[in-house]
Length: 373
Image 1 (cartoon, rainbow, N blue to C red):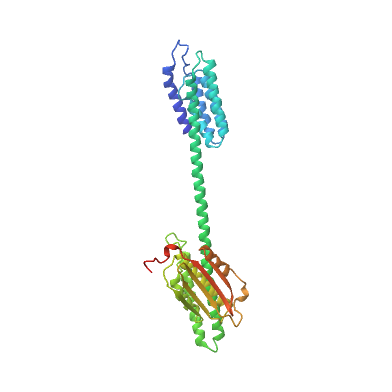
Image 2: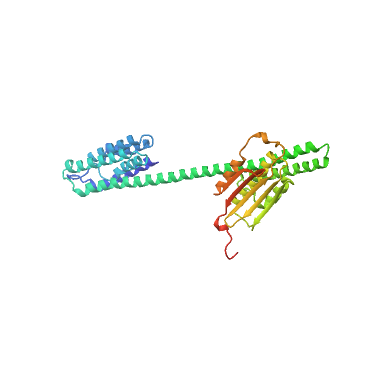
């Protein structure tokens, strides 16, 4: 629709302009529009139909048509509109050199026409007026182009940020699923091995192991539904594991696990509680896999500026049922959780067993105030 609109404005505007510029018998009179004049007023807008596929060709075509229209002496008016549109579009499409060259060429042609072709040369004011018009159009085009590029850059950064957040969410989800499945399936495997070993001689103990398997499988299904539920738009965007569930975790793990708390327990940020819970869960999983029969002690130390999480075991007297599966990603995953919060995690032999210790900083806004103390 733009070429049609430009052509309409040029024709009707030029018809109106020639009423005050065409004076028969006056040597300074402009030439009335004839078929060639109308053709030139239409040729420029027609060339604009190629502005998207051939912007430079369109620019020079419209410039040539405009110069020819002026040199043939037709009335001034909106005949320059097509040229202004072509200049603007050339800058917008990145052909700035061609736009400035064509604009300068148009101005020089007008100066030459007004100085040497017209019977009475024009002064500096008309020359400056045409040059100012061209500069204004180029300036507006540059500003519009800069704003468009800034908007495109903001959109690109926004898309990159969205992709980064989605990647982090997928990584967090994978880590959560690893911890949930690793702990529960390892516990089920150990208890199933115990049930098979005791089924004939100690059926009551085997029944206890099977009961533990039933509860563990139920718990893992419930937690998996909770974790996968965050993929729905109407679900909470963070997993629900926190330190309030630690007692259930220790009890579900078995009688060989115990919990100890020092300091003043208090609510902590969800990220800190979730990391502490997962570190304990992964550590107990490793004890069940690699040190069956060992006793494990979970210790939480609430300090003024950090939470210390420690899991120690007494060492295994027999090889673990899952010890041949390789190192896995348990300890590196725990280190990543601690590092993500600005904390540290160490893991290694201790006395006759193994110890995992994580130091998780507590953000200042959650620290107890002096008045509360």
